[in-house]
Length: 485
Ligand code: NAI
Image 1 (tube, rainbow, N blue to C red):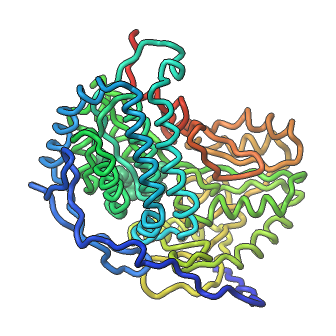
Image 2 (cartoon, helix red, strand yellow):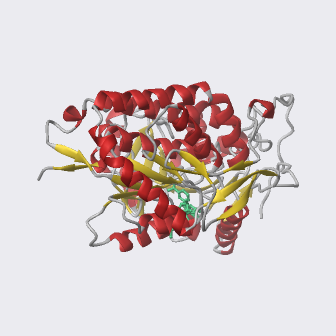
Image 3 (tube, rainbow, N blue to C red):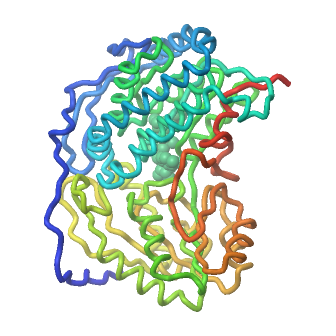
């Protein structure tokens, strides 16, 4: 491994840790079924840990198949009443949830960071505000659905089963629940096994907002609870997670007539042309792959550089990487936090080792990593061949692979040469080129001269193995209704 020593910093920030006292945790969190927090009947109770320290944060009830069935029954029992409510009233509940998320935003950000390992700057400035924004946005749509659907007659699907991953635990819960509720469905949501806490605080918020019992049920659990939920008597499934599990769910639902949307992985290309503002592009590359440890489905993990500027961009990028602050996720100055779990760290290590074996040149920042917890230093790979595993497979870690191109046509061809198609970035000062290239990219989202920017009014979703269906904006409402022919 070729490691370059971290350049000596002339000065550094003093530690600025966020206070844990602002987010007192309960010793135990139960299942939220039928408007009550209840113990599992056939599940278990597990500890949830802080991946930055391996410290146990709380005990969490995990649902067994019987518990999942109870949650689906509760959602079924609540479905007719919720659907019959005047749409304006449904909207008011969503507004209330949004306001309560804002009121508890500091606590939610701290817990998101403790349970998942992401920097507090991300939880505080991205995850929590966007979660509130999704509830606000869909609250506004609840009584305007005829505009979203151009007057087509529609009805709620009924009960929806929603399974979310660990990289944006609260935000993914908001992405799933807000449009489902706005369109008159009831829901059973299963958070990921390593990050259940903010979804369970959201359950407290939903209770406080006074939603009728059973409209939202939140059951923590592992993959077996997810498998039980997607195979249960629900009318629609929404899943975000790995492509392998997404394919398994698709097979299980084939021929059942149940609705399905899948938001799966990605191997997104971030394309930098020679006429781009290079310093700005470097900042976008950093934001696109390192700020969230690369735990982002649309992370810009394939960096495509125009040959004439490749050396300069790599030099600037490396200089910026060396100044990334890796460490305590609760510190307000931290850029790169902890890897979410030992399993995820093992996956990153495995793919990075494959990259080295296959002959790519690895450069990892020589930063000091804490002894406890799960960590991975920001890494870039040069001399990457298109067929290398690191160029093809989703790494889901702070690792970027660099390849070069000569012409816009070659950039498009390389970018599209992927089984995935979730997102892409295009950096150029030439507006016509930006639009021309973007229109040819087979990716659900294309950012121009920016990266990883989200808005509740914009649709998000993938092509090819990145999944199907859209979330966000009016497009995110359609999967939750049935149209009259
Ligand atoms: P995963 O797909 O196993 O987990 C995602 C969610 O699905 C979790 O809530 C999990 O409990 C649930 N689940 C697991 N097995 C299930 C099943 N058979 N039926 C229904 N639900 C099930 O993903 P994992 O293992 O956490 O990560 C593996 C890889 O997946 C990552 O390295 C990354 O490449 C990718 N990934 C992609 C995400 C995205 O946002 N698209 C999010 C998380 C992971």
